[in-house]
Length: 158
Image 1 (cartoon, one colour):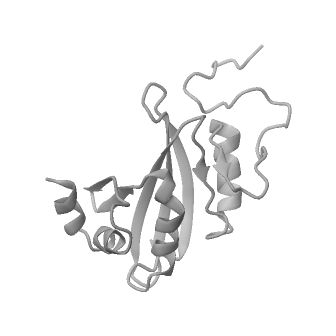
Image 2 (cartoon, helix red, strand yellow):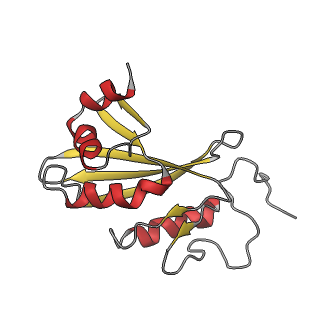
């Protein structure tokens, strides 16, 4: 199926594409879960649309996590889990990131993202551009490295 056919098959993806043409790179619907991939440059606009549009109404950011694909480009995949209370619907939004390409912060859209983004920064080293206070949250300030990266030594740095 082509990207446009994938988008047309899902109301949330279709509405987002209608509001921000070209903002969706990929769509996947698996086991009743919809995931859309959005380029980092369009993330803030897409998240605002997902939250503020009456048809979409994804007012709740439930989780923000990350995966290290190590050899892939982009290396990291940041995943946002959104929920629409009114529609009782879930949506996962993913964006790629590298050490040299930070992800825009969504703390101005969902204040709870502050802690989630700090956790991803602490454990993976992904930077969030525009974050109000990006610093470690779980590990001591003098900790070396980011322990959830695939290349982090099992015994830590010595």
